[in-house]
Image 1 (cartoon, rainbow, N blue to C red):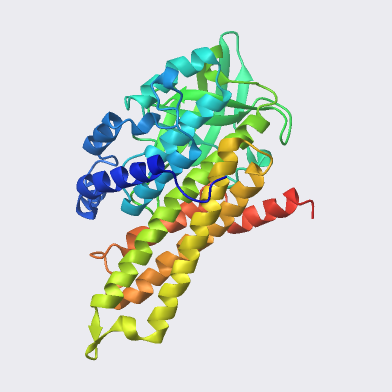
Image 2: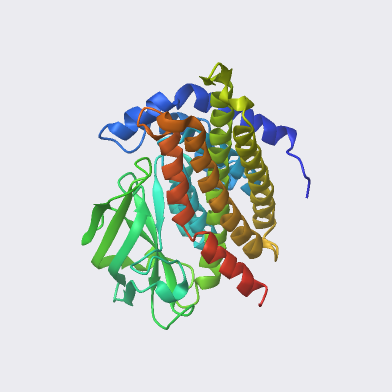
Length: 376
């Protein structure tokens, strides 16, 4: 692998940063958050025109046929702005269809996602709060025409803006056996959506109830009995995507902290001259740069689909989850009393750090997974 970004990747980063600086300033993000909508529809349409929705999708489905590294560059920039669009859950759902779907299913859904005409999300977590196979109990029963889903999914992001949800359900068996992946329209009969209380107001969570939701046979993506290996690959790539978004948020917190430390004057001098503030900023820089290294290594491994991909995905999720939470917390501390106020943006990044930390496993869960993968 190369330890630097290509000219094309740097151009993508600059284009994305310039675009989001203009179209997704924090004032606009707050307007969406404090209004009745959970998605900035104008921003979403503009992003679609730039081809961002299909960035990592094959050209035959309307995409640009780029890879995980390029997708992570874009997600990093989106994480810096907290842009009020469901890009990340849609990207995860698109990856799931690309990974598990057949040619007909890909042709049905992926062009709609690539054009921006379809938003999507991914649902795996239930009452146990875990994405482990043993924690999945939503039942998928065969019918004469296809499948019937019964059960609940919790903490599903951005459901209100999604046209479809990718659902992991149990078709039989226990543990890793008997799991399937289904694509379900959010407008399906006997499907209920109930908003849940969420710390992160920019990424609303919902509970989805399935009361015998009927699906055709084409609603199943891939194998009905042994889909877990495919689902696990999808989850690992999703974790890397989340890490890229978290990295961008951590970078923004560091930049805001340094800027504030230079401009905030106390006792006749900037607070940044104090050793305690300098050390905090230095620790934040170390956390951010280390997060960047492990995130892009994991993105490269996922893109190559090599044997290191599961390990590096969990290593990244463990490290970056802890790092973002720590950096976002220090950002509040460096800002002092105003850092706790609604008017400053510190709390928005801290809330995103906490919600992203829990999504698809926190640091403790992934350190445990790394130990299992090392067979210790």
